[in-house]
Amino acid sequence: MNSFEEQDFSSEKFNAGIWKKILKLVLKRKKYLIWMIIFVTGLACLDILYPLLNSYAIQKFFTEENFETVPAFIACYVGIAFGYGITVWGFIKMAGIVEARVEYEIRNEAFNNLQVLPFSYYDKTPAGWIMARLTSDARRLSNIISWGLVDMLWGGFTMVGLLIVMFVVEWRLALIVVAMIPFLVLVSFYFRKKILKSYRNVRKLNSKITGDYNEGILGSRTTKTLVLEDDRNRDFNKLCLDMKKSSIKAIIYSSLFYPILLVLSYVAVAIILRVGGGMIIGRVEALIGVSTLYLFISCATQFFDPIMQIARILSDFQQAQASAERVLSLVETKPEIYDTNDVIEKYGTIMNPKKENWEELYGDVEFQNVTFSYTGKEEVLKNFNLKVQRGTSVALVGPTGAGKSTIINLICRFYEPTTGKILIDGVDYKKRSLSWLHSNLGYVLQTPHLFNESIADNIRYGNFEATMDEVIAASKAVNAHEFIMALPDGYNTVVGEGGSKLSTGQKQLISFARAILADPKILILDEATSSIDTKTEEIVQDVTNRLLKGRTSFIVAHRLSTIQNADIILVIKGGEIVEKGTHQELLSLRGEYYDLYRNQFINEGIEKTKF
Image 1: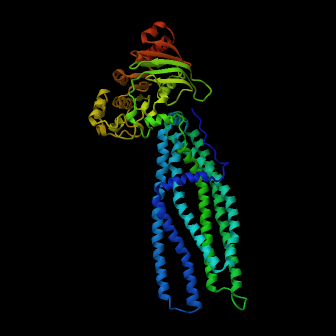
Image 2: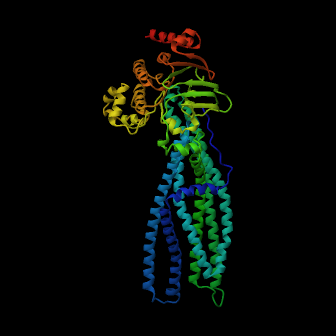
Image 3: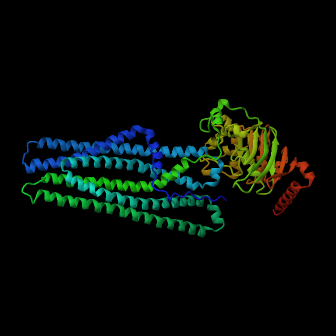
């Protein structure tokens, strides 16, 4: 079992580079972003006009008692009201569109990268970790980018505008507001670090919990048959408790952050009241009027409100950076197995293949001094050599861990040799594209995977361009047509998640039909009959014999009775070929294969006598 430890980002500071990369996703749809900025700018202008208009009313209507401009004042008020309605509607709509599009771009890029990543990535990365990146992290990130950006822009524009107004009206009072900014910055800087560290730990624990959810669902049968419910529940409860403690710690920091900023902002307002009040009273000639003092109190309150909003958004950005780091770690993960630039230029990529340049694959396979290890330490294959001519069926037998599946994985280029070469039709397969090789492979697993779609669609995965007549013909060729037609909706029957509505044997027959439809040049059968009953095995064996004709095939066999007709049988032990020949030739040697066959024959005979 592969262990997986997520990269720890907890020692890193706020990373502007992370957000630059995320911003590129936002800028893919500039039109909506530009409109959002226009509406937010309009809202900020209205927020600045509102106290100016009220200050004007106090001066004109109450101090000077001049009511000539009342109609114009009312018209301006109505205009501002309509302006608020339009700008608020506009930025909510645009921010919502930006949020949906950013979430789409994040998930789309991540999923596209998942299609390119090799088998080795999935072999060592838990499905729950990937699911957490594509769901909760993507949602959190798109939310903070869209609505957080709105608040940041609104706050920034409003603060700049209010500062200009205050300095123009009375620069001495404006300096009081400016003097408070360093204290706010220091508080923000301190809490920003604390909140970031806490929420990174929360997101890391969330990934583990999601992974545990996934493992608990997939392994439910094992849990129940081994009576592990209490142990699994105890482990899961510990994870949840750890996340609860980390979440509470993060919430405490966040809850302290906003009130401290609030207190500092109202200290500034109190100072303005004291100084401004002194400028009105206590002198023979007042330096400022009541309307000006109102304007400053209103502007100061409005000025610090955006600061608190920006501080809140910065806090949210701290939380979201943990999500951003994890999403980008998925989006930017480079495949360990990839095509070189020269190969891509000629053959295209997996997502954009240049099929017109693909050579026909005939099926000659050769291992040249291949050595391979999964961990970089223990060698699974050692100077492995094998030459298989096109159209040959090769069976691989041997004890568990001998290297049979490794040979298959290397042929499919799910992994690549540590040293040595693998040639397809006499050419190192690294000089041809991955998509070229995989499009010519047929792979039938021990437990085939079916998608939660109709039977016809599942078979059509072998060839998306296949007609319904071709799908039915492939089904008849593997003796699957009869049981499919017996289902309520025939070929339109939805098989359920992983094919849960079908038996193992039925799923296996559908996977064979899929392979026939793909018409592969190289066919891989990995323990294809080990999980099915004897009756279904006879059907599958008949299908297999027909399917192997004219194709290069590699069969990893559990039941030796299924490979008696193979052209070559290889006995693998310790990553090396210890015996090679036909069924009869190997039996006559009375070696490893003879012992395997005899022991299995005796065991099967004992099993039959029990009934």
